[in-house]
Amino acid sequence: MFDSSRRRTLKTLACCSTAIAVPNLVFGKMNASDVKRWDKEFDAVVVGSGFAGSAAMLSLLDHGITNCIMIEKMQYLGGNSAYSGGSMAVAGTPIQERDGIKDDPESQIKDTLKRGHDLNDKELVREMIYKGPETFNWLVENGVNFKLVSRSGGHTVPRSHSAGAGSYITRPLQRKIIERGGKIATRVIMDEIIYNDKNEVVGIKVREKYEFNFDREFDENDNKSGQVKFYRCLGGLILATGGWGADIKFRQNFDPALRADVLIGATGYTARKLILDDIKFIDMQYIQRLHVTSADEPFFGFAYRWITRGYAYGIMINPKTGLRFVNEIADRKIGSDAIWSMNENGKNHPVLIMDIEGTKTVDVKDFQRGLSVGAVKKFDTIDELIAHYGINKEPFLDQLKRYNSFVDEAAKDKEYCDPEFKRNFSAYKGKFIKVEKPPFFASRPGPKVHHCMGGIKTTIDCEVYNNDIALVSNLYACGELTGGRHGFNRLGSNAVLDCLVYGKRAGTKLAQIYNAKRGA
Image 1: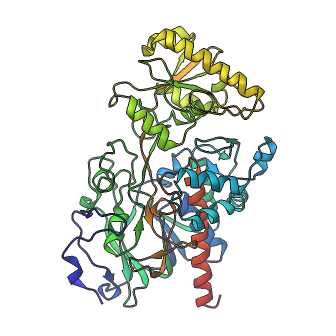
Image 2: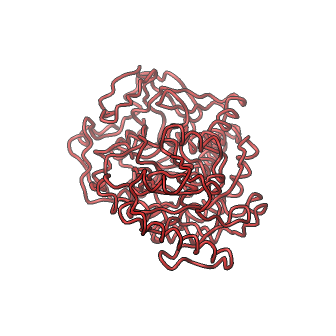
Image 3: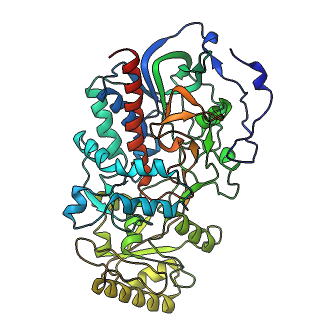
């Protein structure tokens, strides 16, 4: 039964020695005996409509679970997934074969463990990566059109497959859900998970007609909008609510040094409540900054596509010295740390530069968006660019000459690494790109808090553990809300893979267990 004595004092997370202050909340699980009436009844409920939630919902339908619903607290679908970069890291695809790229899952596993400092759950990593091609094909079958493959920082080969922004993945999946009779509801926030006396999940308490507050300083725990309803979950509950990068107070329990730059929506509301429900969390101290965002835009912005290509086909310098200061294709942790250490608390942002040939690698619509808001700038001559950013001219021109010579060497020897930062170079459609042909384009990268590597501890089937390392019946979790896949640092494009592989798997596992129970 419901234990009110558990509502008296804060706990300490097993994964962190810091006591987690959770304002306006009290301890204890909500018991089914506290529910006077169920307002709605479903075989399954999915909470969250991003990559993981959309994949989980469609997977439920694939396996015959039709009386299910996906709920989203925001006024629109997709969450942070919809406006993310949306690239999915997969090893061994027809697109790679088309472009002459040799790759295999073991190479991707090696890259992932290296950047995760071997702190990853290796079983979860292997499952995620080996299921990549199968999930890629499933997405294509459901309307996702992957157009190109590129190389993200930390990967040894190009394997980041892009369909466009993240919405180019979430929207096709959501269209399929609707076409197949699936239910989707926005402005519905989950407040509580409801358990029976056996500690099995049997439902949730929600508020419908919820009004999300977009003020970054607003604490979501103070939002009392909406109408309380109780949903019964006969087969189970899938949590896909994302991370907590926007919850400054909460995340600073784990990394107090992080600045306030955030992405909207990832408030940590669900994570805080799950901690109170005795759910096991791991790796919470590992929080990633995204170095492809622009210092000249709030939140994620529009320049990220150009900046992503700029790291692969351009040069980044400190304008005060005119010199490079990091391997441009280093992983996100190394790149972000290097930028933060040189930018003098935001007073001296780096300058990332590509010429017209490099800029042609960017989708024209993505490029135009960055250009239209001024986060990407165009210069007819290199002298104009130097003058605009106040770059230390002579050292920069010498640096640029050396950089272009490194590209020339890489064209002769594909194993070549530059002597300054051990960077290697990738060709684009068979051509190695220097920075030499006008017009020139530039942007100022400004890392923002982006991805939480830690989260709920799960099995490879997305089943959830409590702090006693016992499975919580009928409860599943996937996506950024979960931990263990990425370890110390996540490789670019591995998160989309993680969300889609395990979202699909969560729906499959719930369906298998529930269908077996009801003899379907």
